[in-house]
Length: 305
Ligand code: NCD
Image (cartoon, rainbow, N blue to C red; front, side, top):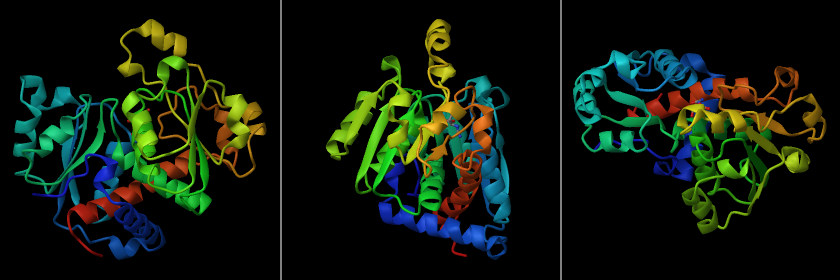
């Protein structure tokens, strides 16, 4: 059976550490890695829109000397003819050594992995999980704060449908002395299974509605977009979409060593003026995602530098 990455917990904390060390080394010595996946092929099967995740996977593969193939919407694949995801991955496994899949249905990459003879990477499944975004987030926190423990982490926005939040919480539950401050409207609180995971791991957390009340207590502020595509009706989306806007005024209430992350894309939730604040890390975070994907591809393809 190949090794897949479907959930962030598929990797042990020690393996994540090793991936971060590898990514740090790739950042420091990119040339040493230029050929290590030569003759390997990555297929990106994206049934949902994406910029960073798909392109950073593709760029990661190219930077390691590998090649890429794939599709970027369900309409342009045989899904439009009614093919099942299982049949698609069995076919694509004849052409590629590793597959990155994004799908609107929760669990689709897990189901595909049951029949897939090559590693599958979950690149986002519905409102559920997004483990490779979490790898980017963890490297960003480690590089920006120098540690992954003793942190107060605020997660703000759409905590119900935001899959990056669910995977990040799951990952952070393994580190010591973490406290979560969950900032959302009542309707967009974390799902019960995420709350239960925090309780099982004895992670302290509070759930609040106002960002201004807590921003001054945070080491990390992880902003998220309200996930329009997961809402059942447009009226609810319109009512909730601008619940939080991080602007220069609110940044004045924050600590000098706060780090602001966002998986991107942003809509309105961070004003453009905040981009020039040295505490804004989200574009660096997008860059680090590419190096973590490089490290992950090497691991799943069992290639050393
Ligand atoms: C996120 C996603 O797809 O879940 N984007 C990303 O992969 N960087 C966040 C989002 O779409 O809001």
